[in-house]
Length: 482
Image (cartoon, rainbow, N blue to C red; front, side):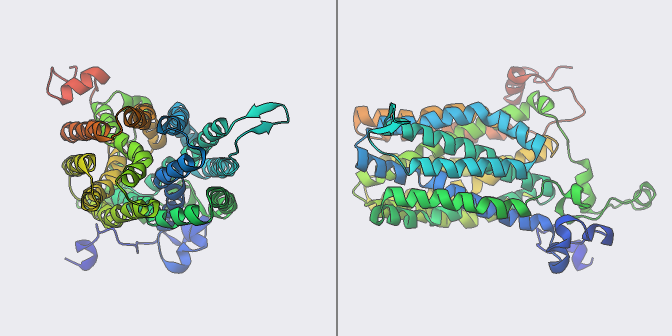
């Protein structure tokens, strides 16, 4: 057995080139033909860089903004959490719409629209002032400015951020989908590495100058990034994973051992409506919801929790840095393994680890427990994300991936509206985060159990409707109409 055949399924960066007629088209004629690297990997790099920026500014540093605004304005944690809850309401409302828009207009167009809005939102956030007057007529309080700015940032990051980038990667990869998505999503963790830097600048330069710089940076990079983005490989004479064009029927019949590169021809192509009628859609949706609600709450309340324990804001940033340092290699490892092993048991393992980390932070009272949390949370955070995303591509294909993801995230977005507000309210009432964190641990454990019932949809069979689907997956009733 030759080396190519023996190692042909590894997620190697150097892949076979398409025929010469495809090399002169689109992006292949710019970098791919010169370097011999499949253009999809360049797009993975673009996605990783954009997710780094979005993670740092929208996701990972939320707690840092929380503390800075609390110090400057003296707002309660319920009020501050309410701003993030309000922004999540907007995100939930446009979730299914943004998926449809991505599938309809393409990833590049939605990136331009979304990141332009995101940059404008940060500029608005940098101008928070008490007693500002709008149009010299209406009083415009800092609270209203804060809520509006967060809403604009959330909508922009939703339209042009994570879902847009994952849809692009899903379009360009099939056999190596999990590894490619894991590589792209590494940007989420690279953003975490930069949190202490941003926290330092907010502490020493000031909140407003730091946030204004972010807004300007986001707006400046929109055009150059959009110039290199591409929607689908077929538009440029290429195929997912850099595979060669399919062979003729006669060639396929002569060769009974078709190579793995042709396996992608059998990939499912579900519409959004077809996906909604499968048990797998609802099981994965509920699992994703149960695991993600704690992530949003911690993005807001972890830094305040650590500061309450006696850490400085910069020290709290280093806890985020620690779990990010652990999560990054786990992300690549989980993506690599998930292209070779069934995903449900892997997801179950990472969710159980997440459950343990939430129990630890609920009881944490000192430096050592904070870093034990960082260890466990880093393992779970790094391994879980790519798998819960790529499993949708495996189960439902590329045809309506963004729309399916948007619909699947709708229940999650609705619940995530409540969780930061819930944690802030309970803290204001009890002076502790113990009850919220234990609640999140229970939800994560429930998701770990449920994911073991996920099964790949049978495209040739009649799928039951949602309630029957879930009962069937749990072994209650027939689960499928004959």
